[in-house]
Length: 407
Image (cartoon, rainbow, N blue to C red; front, side, top):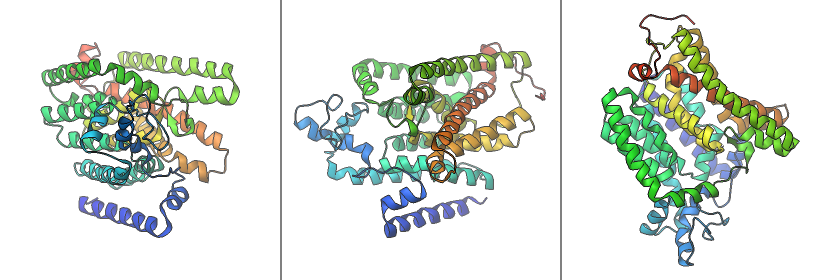
C-alpha cells in the first residue's frame, strides 16, 4: 500500500472518530463502540501528576499520600514527574492540555513508526486494528504516561542506527517509567562490540539511577494495584488471582503453581528444542527485527513482573510488522507461531469489545483472553530466542546453521 494513502486513511479515521465524539459525546462513543470504561474527569491517570503541587502545598509526599488526585490515589510514577509538575506548575486545570499533548504524541509516534515500514495491505489492517482497539483507546482515555513512553520508543526506533540516540532515548524513557530499560534489546542488530558497549553503559547509568531512587521505586511498586480490575489486565498472576476470587484459595494456588511451572518448563523446552534441532533460522526475514525485539521484550518482561492494565498492550504494535512478514515464511513453525501471535494480539487488544458483543459468558471470553496472553508470552519467548544474533547464539553454545531447515 502506498504510504501516503495509508496516512490519508489514518487521518480520515481520526477525523471521523473526532466528529462522532463531538456530535454524540465522548462517553457514549467510547462505551458504545469500544466498551471502554471511562472516568470523570477525563485523562484520569495523569491527574495524580497534575495534582502533585496541591499535595506538596499540604506538606505531603505524593508517593505516600496524594490528596491532590481527585480519587486520592498515590502517585505511582518516578519522582521525576513530581519535579516536572513543580517546574511547569501543573494543576488539575492543566490536565486537559497535558492529556491532549499525550494524544498528539501517541498519534505522531504511531505515524513515525509506520513511516519506516514497507506497508502491505495485511500490515495496514493489523496496525489499524491495534491502534483503534479498546486497549489503545483505554490508554488515550486515561491519558496514561505509557503513551509518552510509546512515543519515545517510536522515536528511538526511527533512529535505531544511531547508537547514542537510541540508548539515550531508551534511558530517558526508563527514567520516566522504569520498565522501558528492557527495550535496549533493540540494539541487538548492532555489532557485538557496539551492543555490549551500549548495554554496559546504559545499564550502568540505569543502575545508578535505581540505586539513588530505590525507596521511591519500592513505593511505586506498592502503589501500583495488582488485584484491582483483573478483568482489564494481563500478566502471569492474573489467572490465579481471578481464580482465587471466584473459586477459592485452593484452586487459585493450584493455578499459581501450574502457571509458574508452565513458564519455567516452556523456557527450558525452547532451549532444549533449539539445541536438539539446531534450528536457528539463519535465513529468516529480519527486516523489522529491532522493533519486534523491543515490543516483544516489553510484553514478556511486564508479563513476568507485574499485572498490567490492558493499555500497556499498545507496545504490541511494534511487533506487528515482523510478525506479518513471518506469516509468509516457508518454515511452518515460524509461520504458525507468527499467526498465533497476530490472532492473540487482535483478540487481547479487542477483549473489552468482545465481552460486549459475544453471545458467550463474559467469563469464557475472559478465560480465552488470558489463555491467549499466555500463548503470546510463549510465542514471543520462542521467537526472541530463535532470532538472536549469531554471536549471541554462539555465546550460549547454540550452533547456527547456514542451510535451510525444515521443521
